[in-house]
Amino acid sequence: MSTETTTETQTGAPRDADTPDTQELRKLSPFELKDTLIELADESAKTRAAVMLNAGRGNPNWIATTPREAFFLMGQFALHESRRTWNEPDVGLAGMPKSPGIAARLRKFLDESEDSAGIRLLRDALDYGVSTLGFDADKFVWELTDAAIGDNYPVPDRMLVHCEHIVRAYLAKEMCDSRPPPGRFDLFAVEGGTAAMTYIFRSLMVNGLLQKGDTIALGTPIFTPYLEIPRLEEFGLRTVDIRQSAMTEEGRHAWQYPDSELRKLEDPRIKAFFVVHPGNPGATAMRRESMDLLVDLVRKKRPDLLILTDDVYGTFVEGFRSLAAELPHNTLLVYSYSKHFGCTGWRLGVVALHEDNIVDAMIARLPEAQREMLNERYGSILLEPERLKFIDRMVADSRAVALNHTAGLSLPQQLQMSLFSLFALLDKDDTYKKRCRKICRDRLAALYQGLDIDLPDDPLRTAYYQTLDLDVWARKHVGPAFVEYAESRHDPLDIVLALARRHGVVLLNGSGFEGPEWSARVSLANLDDDDYPRIGQSLKDIVIRAIQEWKGTRLDS
View 1 (tube, rainbow, N blue to C red):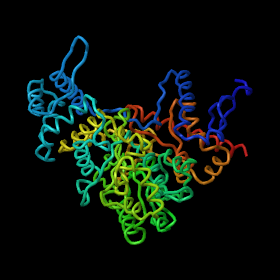
View 2 (spheres, rainbow, N blue to C red):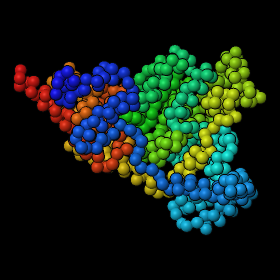
View 3 (cartoon, rainbow, N blue to C red):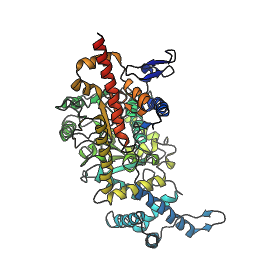
View 4 (cartoon, rainbow, N blue to C red):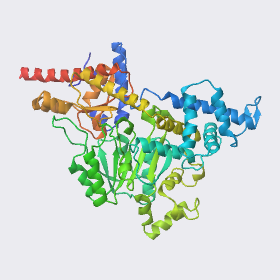
């Protein structure tokens, strides 16, 4: 092949002339870089008659079926109810569901339907709502039915009444290890976790709680968009890294925060701490000692510190407990249903803020002129706008205030969110949750089998991702001379480029998460079990080639 059309990477994989230079590629988010990697991997798969393996995506390849079946059954029942009030079948027109007696009619519908998991979930959900949560049966069933039809604006706009109670109970179980703090969390249903974060940042800025030039801390490595949001021009925030730089005695990444990193938060210039917990890409929950240190630090030295925590992976760790459970006064919690229930396309997320919180207290202490300006901003939606809670200000801001009357997550989305939550609440043995965890752990074991290395135990690991640092491995198993050679001749992106080009395997570069330069993140959620040994073998092949190249240069010299 002519050198005019290709060059050779240091890993022995050909690079097309029209492939962007690695220095240019390093400017991209790993989620944008993946498009280039997919193109390379697809070409590799075509020439090798193999299947491209895209282990860069975090989208799981399983779905929760029972709550989806219940959703479609509610749709059938809801249509029956609509046709009861008004029915013109020739036109395809019906009326709106009516509340009186609707719970009894749902029970009759369920009793007359063929038994299934979805039928049982709806029957148990009705019993749970009435007997455990204290719902009025007709009001509860009407909310579910009307949500299935989607014929009304969301009322209340922040979240449907029964849906909020249900999701609050779900968060108490999954995010608080069934030990929620005293008091109540107010909830805002949103279009996924990333929408939640953009709403939070915007409202913090609008309400003067963060201003351009302020400093916030990021728990790194972290989900790449969370690196990018505070640095956008409209926010203009300075960032300080709180790094998960702790290493184990064996010299591996623990993906934990050393005490010295957490103590950076003592600096009063840091207004907020933004963290994904359990981590992405580190994929571990914070150890108890770090949680205790952080709780002590906030209570004694930084009672003014705001904490933003994205806990989407919490269900993958036994006994997980959110920072919102430990520091409810200081913490805004973001949770997404996407990973656990396999529903990224549904766009289901929620923001939780304790009724007694630092944010509302900070707004109350703003200078009078600033409070008057905010009162004017929100004056069209409340006669006493100074009493508007921050979480309700987020709702208004999400629709530019003027469109607050049409705010809120769509009713069918809130219905599915309720059914996902009820499914988990009624799963007393956590059968579904344990199976999801086992899927990820089995795939992690298969990956390490392909790498031909031992998998260390870590009870705080989610196993949803695995970030592999080749620099750390090479220093221990090959030696510093090889590492020095490799780093002088290679670009860190050569790892993921060579994997895509030579093996048709797509991974995301760890550096794009502000993780270790020579690392790559493997998603253990989105491919078949049998694919993970091949990914491990492919990565092992890349490393072996680099070692052989290094040994060849030593012999030549």
